[in-house]
Image (cartoon, rainbow, N blue to C red):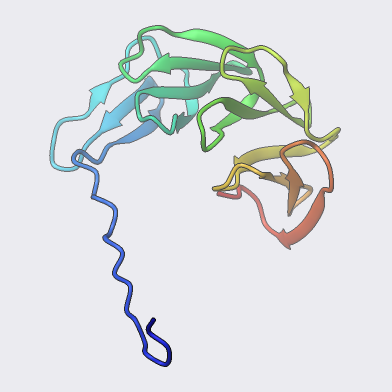
Length: 163
């Protein structure tokens, strides 16, 4: 026993990513951007905006013409997920949240079981909490947070576009 003694616990830092990469929206599509290298356009993404990385780093969600699509990071395997805008992945990668017709909706990554988290009419810019239990979103110039199950919406601050 170490009664009365202080014990230091050292936790190793998580390893840094080997290849930091951004996905950015431009007028002619999405681009993969690595520091100090050439940008690479993601195939078949003309008109895409609001890109979001999947937690596994191998897939993207993005919006185009009022629909949310999923694709592999090179643009292959592109598929329509649901009608909506401003997608964001759940931390476990199993779900995608989006704004649709002024409400916030969640769908499984295969597009099944679309359910409403809010009823709107002016909700947008959804973002998952790091632990996946809540979704923050913009509502009439304020940030509101609701349980990802759709219960207990609470306004917490003025602002837009939570992350």
